[in-house]
Amino acid sequence: MDRFKTISLIDPDTRRRAETTMMFSQGSYHVESILLVADNGTAIATVIEGLKTRGTWLPVIGFSENVDPLRSARALFDGMVAYLPAPLSRDLMEAFLASAGSELSAMMAKKSRAAAARKRLDNLTRREAEVLSGVAEGLTNKDIAERLGISHRTIEIHRANLLRKLDTNSSYQAMRAAIEAELIT
Image (cartoon, rainbow, N blue to C red; front, side, top):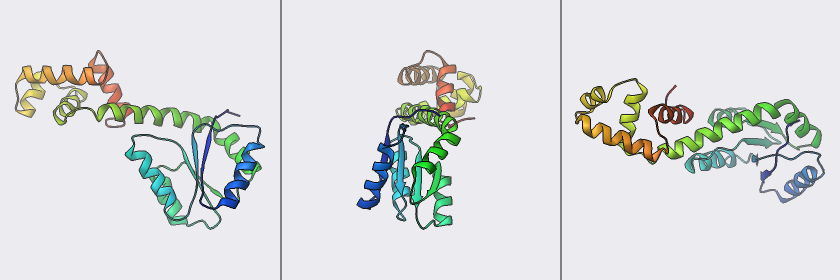
């Protein structure tokens, strides 16, 4: 089973939070950066939105005694990775981590790279982002200049600035950042 480091439990029910914390402390595994969120109707959506606002991604696992299929489906579409029935048990968590551990680790790595790339791309001006988009389409500086109605020299300046802001030396690496940020495919 993959090894992880930290579980962050978000649950306003103090009794259930204490029981769940005790269960994890007795486990033979650790979990890295997973948010385990009790579904009270708004908590999961609030956590996912907060992560997006911060430009961060962490796997969110929701749980509830009374599963609302529509709300849980919406949360899965918005980025939650799993929804488990409450009360949580060590056997259930171990089975989940054993079956999904490697996929979860791969997803965490990919989503973390995407969030980091988006954060870097957020530093670009609108014009620099337009230039990067043109580069990603395979356009030359001249073609991008014609499209944007500005000079070829201005495109070169924007291109140099975006490479500096993305801390890269080549347009290829800049496009890779855009791909990792899932801005282009």
